[in-house]
Amino acid sequence: MTTLRPWLAAASMLVGAIACGSSTTPRADIQDAGSRISDAANEPLGGRGSGGSPGSGGQSSGPGGQSGSGGLATKSGGTSGKGGASGGSGGQSGATGGSTATGDTRDAGQDLPPAADGAADTVRPRDDAADVAPSRDDGADSARPDSSVPATFRNPLNTSHGSDPFMAYYQGNYYLAATTWGTTLTMKKGTTISALKAAATTVIWQDSTPSRKGNMWAPEFYLLDDGKGGQRWYHYYTAGDGNDLDTQRSYVLESDGLDPIGPYHFKAQLINDWAIDGSILQAGDKLYFMFSAWQGATQNIWIIAMTNPWTVTGQRTLLSQPTYAWEKEGSDSVNEGPVALYHEGRTFVTYSASQCASPGYKLGMLELVGGDPLKASSWEKSATPVFKTANQAYGSGHNGFFKSPDGSEDWIVYHATSNAQGSCWTDRTTRIQKIAWQADGSPDFGVPLALTTDIPVPAGE
Image (cartoon, rainbow, N blue to C red; front, side, top):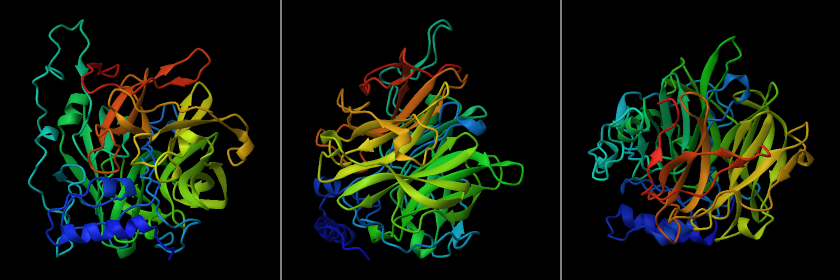
């Protein structure tokens, strides 16, 4: 086991105090550590090292007919595991210890300890009424009074537990997943953005296998070929034993059918070492797995080839590491949460830079300019960030992409906090806005919009 950084020991003592009924509130000290801790006081989940990818959302016009890929937001915080501690449950297949739990609804991240009989979580009393019935005092989300006036909405899409979001639009519905911080993976579904905001979350997976039962982060789901002449949803996520961040590994589930909500069964572990924020890149007819892992003093982005959606092959390639000052803000130098965006034959990859608890957490971007994604020389890195704190949306990062219902628009989904000091905690919320395209064919993400902004709904609603 790799020795954890000093901050984790302090975080662990704080978590212990919480579990014992202490009135101490886990804020800056936990946030600065970038820790992933369950919101349930009786389910302490140790701090998290820097990492955690910005949720990638539905990809624009990705090859292979993908409905929209999504990246996870990474939670930088200095996880040890530099170089990647080995271990984990090594590419298991089959539902080993895992159980599908569709139909159970609650707020995202409102995890409870597993029931004694191994059943799925019971419904928890809701303390976040906004996700059930958003207040209408500002008039946003109301029915359009005139068909000639576009409907609008206001961010955020949830009021808490909105980090590392991933989104896709598929067969008439938006689907949204985000980091739960606990023992379950969850998803929301809605025919419109307003319906998505109001929807309760459904628990789509709970796992009792000790090595991967806790600290579930950065979900992403992709519709990919299943190797049998059909397609299935592949749900990528990070998890560990819930106590030691050195146990965090990348896993994938496979759906039984074509419903993004499942049911799912456990498919495999992808990387044997410490790895977070797994995401899919499609280039030509080939798949690649992107993830974040430590090397020396920096947390970097790596890429490795895949033989199918659940198996990696060959050697990993270093895709990006912190080189600019804007990638080194906060307690750690971090690149994490990679996610691909495709447009008119070009391939871009955004990633989150700097430590997640810093208000300077932001997005950088790479472009594939060569033929082989596994060659570092095939990638060109932007010298400046492409999306960063503005309009009191601090630490804007860990993003994904998705298409509008009519397929004409590209949208970014990301998390941010209203805490001016930055945060790696549950006060990060999910936000979306439309992407513009510049004359040279590169994306223009603009700046994070204020929560008071009325945003026209995606085209085709």
